Amino acid sequence: MGTTKWREVPRQDGRRFVVTGASSGIGLETAKALAAAGGSVVLAVRNLEKGEAAAQQMSGEVEVALLDVADLASVRAFAEGVGPVDVLINNAGVLGLDFALSVDGFEMHLATNHLGHFALTNLLLPRLTDRVVVVGSLSHRNGEVDVTDLEWKRRNYTAYAAYGASKLANMLFLAELQRRLTAGGSRLRVTGAHPGTTSTSITSGTASLPKRLVGKYGHRLVGMQPWQGALPTLYAATMDVPGNSYLGPHGVREFLGWPTAVGRSQSALDADNAKALWVESERLTGVAFPL
Image (cartoon, rainbow, N blue to C red; front, side, top):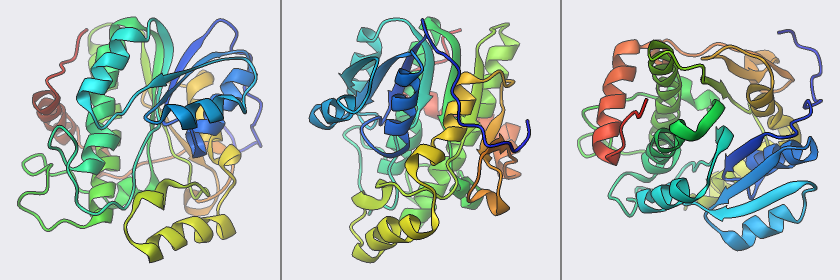
């Protein structure tokens, strides 16, 4: 694909999407565009009031459902009740949190950005008809996934190292899931996308005021608006791209621009680490590959 100014989502009539973290930022803009194109969209959110407010901004067939991806009980309940799905968009995420544990006892970046979506995807795979979209980040390039210490019990914890590790985990998950699907003869595909530098509220959860201000105002000054930052995700979700594709902005260092195929770090291509992460993720979540 080239670097034309793609922004026209093709008609999605008759297709059902689940978008996690759809009450704000990239998730909201993704869901809004899919609904406007005729898709049936499930806003999977941890705050129903915010989800309903987001739904009011959208035209088309939209429903709101409770999902806290950092809580495996919530993930299982959502998966049991959601029904058939064509496309799952794993978008929800947290960034820059002080050390904290999820209700299941996992470090919060790992729980939210990787483990919850790992479990959700595997639980929904038997009902998916088209694809899984993994929303990554430029920060995966700075990440290190140590499968022997995913929960930061041995290493010194820093918020942005934990975030980078969780986003690298997304990339390893993308590749290993596609490998498993292909090996099993499935026609499902897995695609990935990242929003470059986009103005969203993802840093609002950090306890650091300077980091919140940089995230809010710095990205607002130099970053794209959320509607444009959502375009790589929308391309990955609706266009005919091969499995294990990864999309991002076309500009310098992938900060800004229009959707195009982009590369990933060497660590993201480590097949052995991807397989090891998968095994450990199955152990931690209690959810296995179903196909």
